[in-house]
Length: 235
Length: 192
Image 1 (spheres, rainbow over the protein chains, first blue to last red):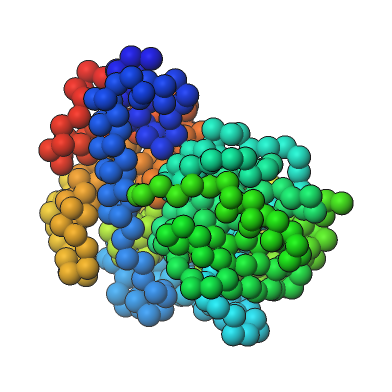
Image 2: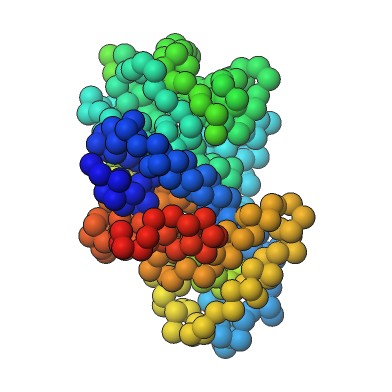
């Protein structure tokens, strides 16, 4: 791979370089510097894209504040239906959260995130693409120093305003979800459960990791494997 | 023995393995929670499509209403996030694309976002936001999907109906433009 090819690849996906591109880096300091610039720029792009999100629709919008472009009886009716749907959704979520008691907000967010990708946490022996797993970890400044076992799912997911690695690790007794939370700090391990899910959020590196599975043993096995396998690099 | 998710949490098992994963009362609750959790992503995606906070709020409201009505058609094997983002994208196109002004005053857009940002965020973030505002739609959208949503180039290609090669080219050009606008330099445009 020459410098031009490298820069085309790095410019399109600086967090997911091919082996050939990574090999080129070892021989070209200029391209290494260019990659450093791109990665720094991507971190800035992410910050810039994370515009503040309004709390709730009802708190910020009223039908009277609709833009002229969307005005009119049909648009107003649609807006009222939307507001009604929002209220119904909010009430349902409220009931759900209220009934769950006083669990920690971070644990609740972790559990809520699990529901985002319902097809991910399944028992399987089909591994995710290794390059993808590495890219997802690399994006968060993590490196694999040893194998963590069969990883069946790897995705960079938005979580509390940051993009975090979301992995599913297959243990001897079933799938376990792992979220690597560089920006979430806990002083000591926090255990929680909901229904037949059990989970833990433990201090790790500069932040923490959340591990959710079907049994405490399963969670412990996965947590220890992940802790031992990942190396936290400075971001 | 390997336990499937169905053995871990029955209500999620229904969501996973039934043809209509968000049907029934459990499904409604799960879907409401799903939407609430994804609302920040949906809003930010809509915002960067429309480059307007109020339009983004309108688009998300309409999209969630449509999604609510069609929730039973959400396939358990697919990604809920991608499904909802597709609805947002279509809703934005349907309601507002034709009404959008041909030219956008980038400085006005940035200053409209600035009051709450100027205090809390760095100058570089504002400069970057200005540069992203100024990107053409074709370059901004794949960049948002990649950097903010964490999608792979293959997933972006699926979302936008493009080839993976076209997505790679657009992402490359988007970063080139940002580098130039921010005065960082970068390789010459001939690499395109």
